[in-house]
Image (tube, rainbow, N blue to C red):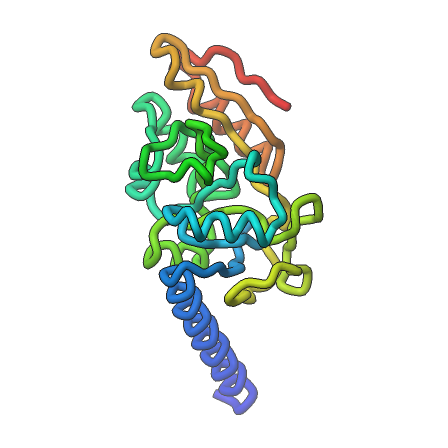
Length: 230
């Protein structure tokens, strides 16, 4: 092994160690009610304890976001997803095909989710990021807010250089893989009529074509009633 290779390996080790330190710091900040900016495969997110009304309000303030606009939450496992939202048995197979990935799934929330986060709606948007840094944080903190780390009305950041929000820590996870917001899929209507599942794509975003393919293929034979698209 030459000296150059050895130095490259050392640099990689140092970088990984630095990221791990940042993750530990982010976890501590969230557990203490603070906010962090973290990378995902779509855009950089602004994270805080999703179960803390005070922490969620801080996210709204940092984003200058109106409280009438709901904020999604991020989970790190399907078990955690079931703790925050009701998942219809007919929808499980579809959801497990879509997640983890660049998709926000709209579901009926459980009581543990504070009303301030959903703007008093019974619907919550759930993300299960396909990003090791994001899920590494969430595994230790529980669900966190999943809203882009930008002031409302401005473009969501896809690298740390574009982040303008001031949080407890900004984790540099490099350029986001897709560098565009998630595709939003409404599956709340799937729970209203057991005879027919109605799924609606509310927003075209990252991997839209794949999401559409999954919905069409997985829903075949499940009594899907239409597939409205934006």
